[in-house]
Length: 466
Image (tube, rainbow, N blue to C red; front, side, top):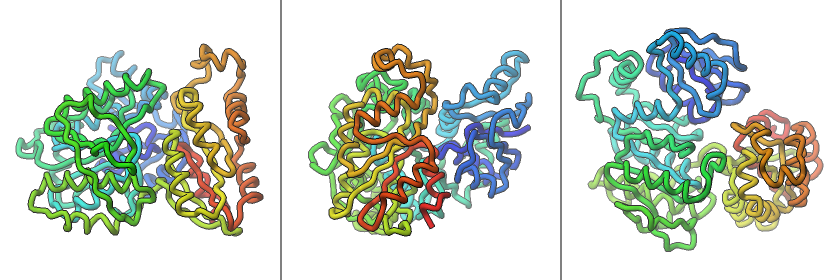
C-alpha cells in the first residue's frame, strides 16, 4: 500500500506529503508533471518523487490524494476506475476533502481573502508559536523563513497523537476520544470550486474580497455566495477589518451575518512592503487575544515586528551583474500588480521598473482585460511571458467573442494580441527572456517577476541570479 499524492509540486498539497512523512509514513509516492524547487525538497527528504505521469501504476490498496488541477490525470482516473469496477474501499480524496477530514478532529481556523492571506497566515503562526502552546498543525501556501523555510508546522511533541489521528483517517484504527478537537489547526485555504465549504471551522478571518477563479465563478455575486455559505458554516465568528481606512483594500462585507469588524491598527513590520498587509495584522492581534485573553497588545506586537517575509510575496532575490535588483511575486490578478507597482515605486522612486508577467489562466485575463491593461501600463517596461494555463484547454474558449473575432489558432496568438493591446511584447522562451533582460536591465532598474506558474523556478536556477 502507498499513499499517492498527485500534483505534489503544488505549494499547498506538498505540505501534506511533508506532514505525512514526518508522521512516520514512509510509503509515499509524490507525482508531478514538472520538476521544481518543491519536488526537489520532497526528494531530498527521502520521498519517492515521480516526474511525469504513468510512472507509477495505482494499486488496489493505495490511498490517493490529488489536486483538482489534475483530476483527469491517469493516476487519479485509474484510482476512480478501480474503485468503481472492483467495488473497492479505495480511499480517494482531493486536497480539500482531505483537509475536511483533518478539520473534523482539530479546532480549525481559516485565514482567507484575495490579497494578503499568505502573509497574514504566516504572521499568525509565527506569533502563535511564540505565545500560545497548543498550536498543533498549520499549512500556508508559501515558504516562511521564520519557520525554518517551511510552509507547514507539526508540533514535535504531539506527533504520536497526530499519528493516531492520521491512522484513523487512513485505516479506521481506533481513535482515543480525547484527541478529537484537542489541538488547533490553522491554515490558508482556497475558495476554488467552493472546496473550502468542506472545512469544519471555529473562526474565519477574511482580509479582503474581489472576484477570482473566474474559470469557475460566473461573477462576483456567485463568488460572494460561496463566502456567505462559509460564514454560515463557521461555528464561532467571522472577522474582517473595518472598512474605513485609506490604506486597506476596500471590501463590502455588509452582506455577512454574525460578523465582527476589527478596528484597524498600523504596525511597522519588517517583512511587509505595503500598508494594506500591515493592516491585516489587526486581524491576527484580535485572534490571539481572543484565544488567550491574558495576552496584552504589547506582547503580541512584539512578536510581529521581527517577522521577515514569505517566499514569492515581493521577495527580493538578488542583484544582477549590472546592478538591477530582482524581485519575484505570486501576483496574478490586476489589483495585486497595481499594489506592488505602488510599493516598488514608493521604495525606489528614482528607478525604472521592468515588469515580467506570466499570466495564470486565460479566463482571468479575458474577464479583467481592462484592469490588467491599466495595471500593466504603469510599469516603465513590461513583458508578457508564456501563459501558465492550468485547467484550461484552448478549445474551451471557442465561443468567446474575442476568440471568434480574431480566430486565434493557438495560445501564442492570443497572448501576442494581448501584449500588442497593452503596448508591450510577448516572449514564450526563457532563453530569449534572459537575453532581453540582460540587455535592458542595469543599476537604474528594478526587475519584478509576477508569476503563479513555473517562471519563478526558472529564475532561481538561471544565471540572472549569481
